[in-house]
Length: 318
Length: 93
Image (tube, rainbow over all chains, first blue to last red; front, side, top):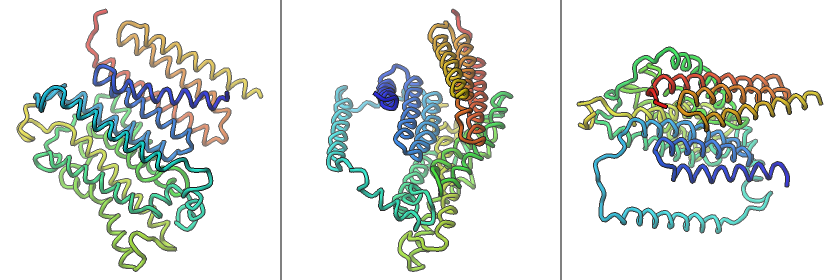
């Protein structure tokens, strides 16, 4: 048994155990903590599988930003709302079990249908052959923004749509009624001052590095969102756009992506088909805009999860 | 060779601190004593592991990034345990 195999077995066990604990450990905060541990272990698994891009995304989005959202949800919200149980007691568990079983069957069938991919077949070699044509030298970025840009466009659209839906739950459609935390006490304030520049530097690095090595807009955007959330919690109210700049910041990524699509059509190249010699520059610029917009979207999701001030929001008691 | 031995010694020492910190977390009675065990042992443990990896780093930049990770972990751990210790209600033990 080699060292690598032992490490893999430990990792697989840790993933399964942390997933099970996240579901079944008593207490909401403890579940959230186990979910974060699960995300971190999963990131290590992705890194072990040689997929550093996915590992970065998992660590930054699933363990980082989702962690902030979940922790905020379990600490800021009451344990349970008014009892809105529909139907008899066994109905909801039964529906959940049926839906879960259906998902397992569907996903299992899809996985069986896909079958194992022999090394050296599939789309991998094609992508590696064509990466040089895409204007970037990192194959994952080439797939995301050159070969399958349409998929990435839809991902950005899904995120934007989610933010729009969340904003629609606030009476003013903006976030001006959500109270901002006051100035932080000295110790967290020092953390914000120390950490935010490093995080922003890291986000910029991930963005630029994305064209030649692991990194990219989603990872950089998640880091940026973390920095914005830290700033807001540190008492800098304007860090997360609310009010006038909210909608432009949320929409600019999707708008830029769509504009790029229309421009490429108008130039006669085809939908989102980029050509020499500008493609590398265009991809980097688009990723820069996407980073800002994704960062703003994720940070806005965090702020929108907080309660509006009493009397101005949805009419709830504080 | 000497560097490898150094790495091994530092790794063992770091893991020992992690083990002691975890033991303290499990055995100590209340939040503040647990924080005491966790912060000191984990910061030292991580620091020793990082120091163990520095001789194995391929370049100065790589070594500097490892040290930066340690520094960020120190700052974050100090802040979070300060907040936990400050805001926790007094516990009767």
